[in-house]
Image (cartoon, rainbow, N blue to C red; front, side):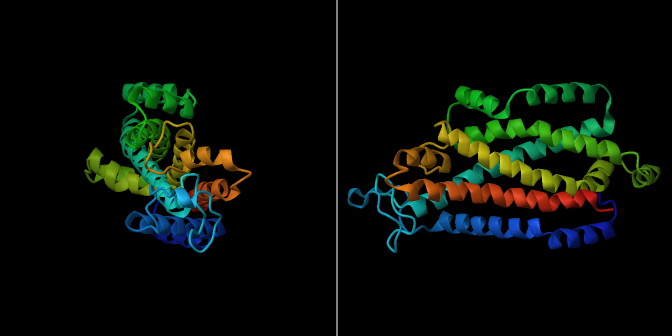
Length: 280
């Protein structure tokens, strides 16, 4: 773990040399670039139907072909990937911010607060996450923002437990004792001394969180409770494409590859960042 400024530099050098991290950075970077471009421009309107261009094979006119409504698959995949990333980003952000607060308080103070909040954490973790997410969305209703909220709540326990464990380890170290002797407040010790030193562990956990969020959003959209039409969604597109596997295999292949690349990119980043925990 990195506990001094010099270790940060050494840790970053090792991470940047890591093959997994480099590969993950390239894949994720390219996907994010496509998503960013797709936010402002796509070759065609993703929702524009063209009855004369149904199920066209990939070519110069339509790079990835068209779907059963004549819509450009490339434009829809790019926008669908953007919707998936937005859900993943929002869910991880909610889980991370609230998880940091809960984990920091329970890990630093312990006592009854730790017992109560950790028991709540354990209760949430006891249920299959995707099943619990489906129940929550069924109650709140389908839609992009409801999925963000549902997944965000489900990510809180994981981040809270990670932060709690790391804060509990750090609170009795020499640099924290020195800060107390110098009169630093608990708030200052937590946010200016301890939390910056657990960032390497959190980075790896955040990458894993993105990976899980992408897969969860795609799964829920595939089941029809995610991003709703007419907005494109990778999961829903994959559901639609399965009916045309024999007649238009490029449809499912294009969507499937986009999902795989998103998951693979964050997965490789997580592997590369995981080496930070072994840096001394």
